[in-house]
Image 1 (cartoon, rainbow, N blue to C red):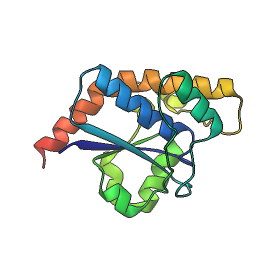
Image 2 (image 1 turned 180 degrees about the horizontal axis):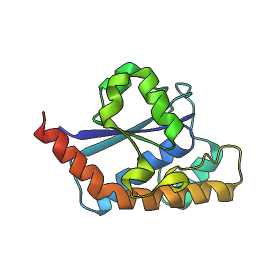
Image 3 (image 1 turned 90 degrees about the horizontal axis):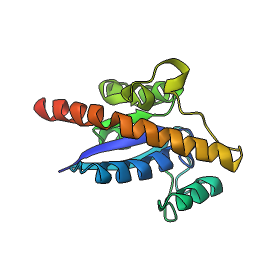
Image 4 (image 1 turned 120 degrees about the vertical axis):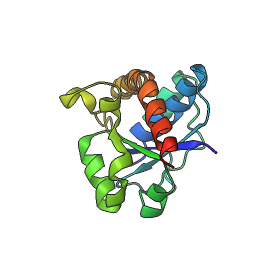
Length: 162
């Protein structure tokens, strides 16, 4: 059985799909096993593709988002995951609005990576230039690489309490 991490952003077409794909690669490269990753959006439509610029940035970095399909955030989805990592503080509020019991497993990705204040948020590149998507990719990569030990630690704690 794996520890399931859900990434949440607004539309589930830009940041969270990239985070999901980057996390798979980072965990594999670091040799960390026993984790699975998915994503959803607080305002996501079920079945949308990743945004064209997210697809382009993924291709540039040897990540595959071609078959990605967006999902909206639901109670059932939240109940089925072990950890929720959000891109900005407003997403945490949205998660708790859907499922108040998700409080103890919902974290701002940037804070787990050791960032504070506005640096902890991942800005939404939606509607921006391809370079803004590249900046988002780089920020997500740095945050995920930094957050791996903390994610593993929290997963271990959760396993100890189950």
